[in-house]
Length: 303
Image 1 (tube, rainbow, N blue to C red):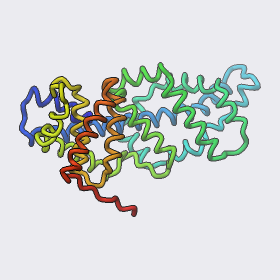
Image 2: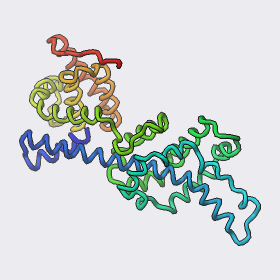
Image 3: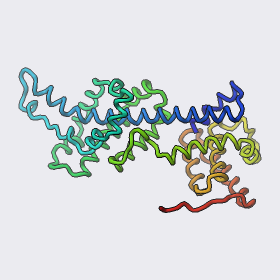
Image 4: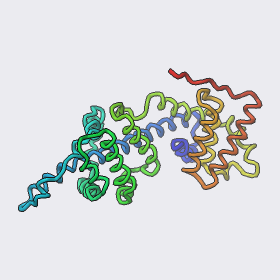
């Protein structure tokens, strides 16, 4: 969606042909994927360094001129968290951090501040008091850091917005990717943050929307009734094109999945009325295409 949205301005200023639009669209899509990958890896590195700071904090406190008993007995359990080490020992993560020089993009003072905030939280104290390393507990504290000390931290969110282009646009994707890590940390490939299948789907959807522009608009415009196509929110129009493209040219995607997906995207990224608007147009278009026997769906293989 974002790649197609970016193409709107490009098309209006440079007036390219479809081949030019397709090439530019694929370039924008690649740039979007690379940016989302960077944001995901930066987020994971912050998560790791906040957790590792437990050892730094212990070392600094014990090296005081007159350390207290508490200073000499700081609990460093978090620094040995099993989820943390599954991340740190992931060869693809290490390679990505090294290749992209991500260490240089991390603010040490920010890491310290966020760890100190964590150290005062009841959830952290409870984690430290529990004996052993139960997988559920290890996962829970890392998720707590991610959700409460990063996602819900207004200062950190403002920093991410100001420092990394596209954070507001790609934050939802980053959240999804981090959640995928917690589901199966050993299987995450940080060098290829989306599967080859999903990458191919995105590229195919983009190019098909561009190539079938006239067909799509012929289906959409009659459904707008009193709305001029030029007055419809640009994002809504893009979502309609994408949805109808999936109806007609992506036989393995169920129509119900398509409609539900684009309703949610419209609610999140467009106007207050967009969800209902997109739902109505897609539903009416699907009925028309079904009656004309133009919907050809096949069941996905379960293997």
